[in-house]
Amino acid sequence: MYQYHLYLVKSDYAKHFYYKIDTVYRFLQEQMMDQPSKSAQGQYKLVLDKVYAKDLFLHLNYWKDQDIHINMNRNHINLMDCKQSISLTVNDYSISISAETIVDLDQILFRSIKTFHPHVFVVNYETYECGWITPFVGKQIYSL
Image (cartoon, helix red, strand yellow):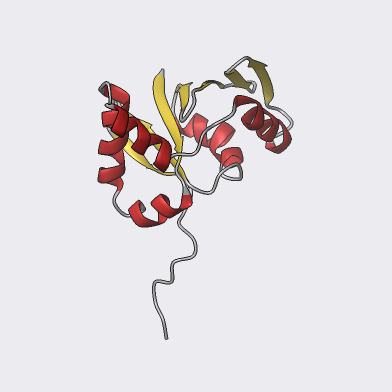
């Protein structure tokens, strides 16, 4: 079972740091693993959007496939289909997820959560995997 963490990054910071994944990872890891100082906690709140369990539950319930069942108990949300099960714990500024594989997350959760927030960053601190689950839109690469 893998442990993933989702973060909802505010638009201004996501645009600036979209191609600086290592910087975002180090910032989040410092916040997650160490006891941050008050100024660092302020930066955390400045960069990330707060997550509300009830809003997330209602959104997932609306956008889910018919064969997926969702249960909520306080800040814990469980998503299940006939083969896979995913457990979410909603914290103030992050969502902790337990899943068997990243493929399970993509099939059950990521498709719905992409419409919940435009800039979602996912981290697995055990395997050092991280990245954005939504593409960056709005930046013109070429101009004629």
